[in-house]
Image (tube, rainbow, N blue to C red):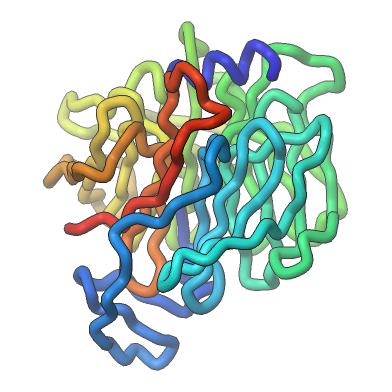
Length: 316
C-alpha cells in the first residue's frame, strides 16, 4: 500500500445503525429485537476474522449481521455475531481500500477508501457497486479518507490528512468538499471517527493526533472544540453516539472512553473508560441488538498478512 496506509498501520459509529437494526443500547446480555423484547443470549466473546484481514471499520446490519472491512484489499466481510460464520460480501479489488464504513436503512454500505481518496457504496446483500466518488483530487498523495457518518441527506467522510470533510448525497447524485478552516492540521493523523448528533444539525469528530473532540456545522464547516474540562482523548479513532453518550475508541491506548455530553453537544465529561483483555488496538465500534462490538486493527503488527484478527464483544 501507499505511504499513508503505512502511517495508519503505525498510528492508528451511529444513529443510522440503530435505525437499520431496530435495536436499542442495553446492558450486556439484553439483546432487544424490533419490538423491544429483551432476552438472554449466549454470544461468543470473540469472533475471528480471516488471517491477514487487516480490518479497521465495523458496522451493524440486520439481525445479527456485522460488517467488517479490509484496509488493503477493499473487501467487506459479513459476520454472524451468534455463530462467527463469515462470508465475503464485497470481493477484494485492485485499487480499492475499506477503512471506516456504515450501513444505512436502505441496505447500502458507505465505505471510506483511505489512500485512494475515494468513497465507495455497495449493496450490503449482494456486494454490487452502487457508486464510486473521487473525493480528493485524482492523483493526490496527501489524503486518507478515514471514516463516515450518515444523515438523512448525506454521508460525511473525514480526511485524516486534510482539514476538510466530504459529503456524498444519499441519493448518490453528487459529492462536495466542506473546508474546515477552524481545525488546524497537525503532524500525523488528524480527523478520524465521526458521528452525527440526533437532530443531525451537527457532526462530532475526533482528532487522533491531538485528542481533541470537535463539533462541526455540516452546512458551513464552522468547528469548535467540545469542552471536556481540559481532558484530551489521545489516539481517538472510531466513535459511536447513543443519545448523549459518546463512545470514543482510543486505539493504541487499548480502551474506550465513555463521554457524557450536554444537550447542545458542546461540552461534556469522561465518565468511565472501558478496557478488555480482548483488545489489541481496537479501531472502531458498533452496537448490535444492545451489545457493543469492537474490531481489533492491531496497528503496528510487524507481519500483518498472516496475523490473527478478531472482533471483541465488549463486556461493560
